Image 1 (cartoon, rainbow, N blue to C red):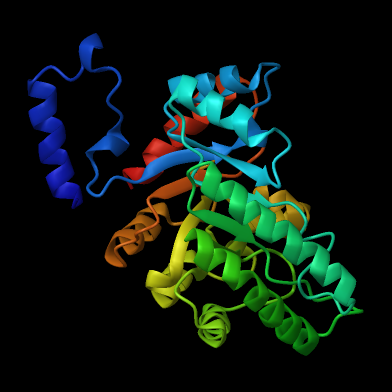
Image 2 (tube, rainbow, N blue to C red):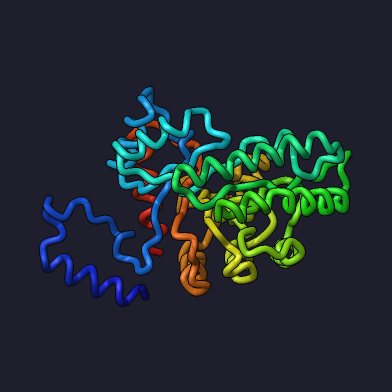
Length: 300
């Protein structure tokens, strides 16, 4: 929806009484077509509640989904019951072993551990009704060369593809601070070498500010983007206070041009449906604030 069309819609809905309590459940993001749903990381919920009550809480705060780590720490049955009772969705899981035991490691036994973990996470995602597993493709450091990481990562991902094809669950490779795949052109080439329709990119908008611009990645990766992570970043804080301090800024108050990002998201006709917050989180007051900030981004 173009901004001018959105403003017209606001005017019509206001005239129809949308400001009244009867319409209080309608969020600004509901007015986009196609709708982009709001999710957050499960580990952002910092209240001592049961699983189902955590799901109910974030649902009440305006979120449509929760993203969890996999293999999951609960049983699939427990999560499905909490989903049913709360109305929340589980659109994706984040594999939890791809950092400590990466797909790029020179040791075949370490790579196998990660491959098996991702295969299990893919199956859990299918059972939970999701469609994407986030995977860090590899890590480059003083002991693992760029070329080694490239070859090992691609070979490892190819071993996961049979499970991906069996379930229909996509692999979304994410840009993180792993000294690997540092430009959108390189990411596109990496995906082209794998050459599978169910292996795409899970684009983290905030992570890229350290060495690039999110709109450039969106433009280049285009239809290869399967999901979006949302966080903010300040280059000034990074330069003045230290690298990781760049994330210590409120959503919409850093260096991301959210208007341009959202224009680009709409221009590429993003099909991934979700924008998922991945920030520090907090109690219900903090999560309510974050929900409103994400609405502001969706309206950019």
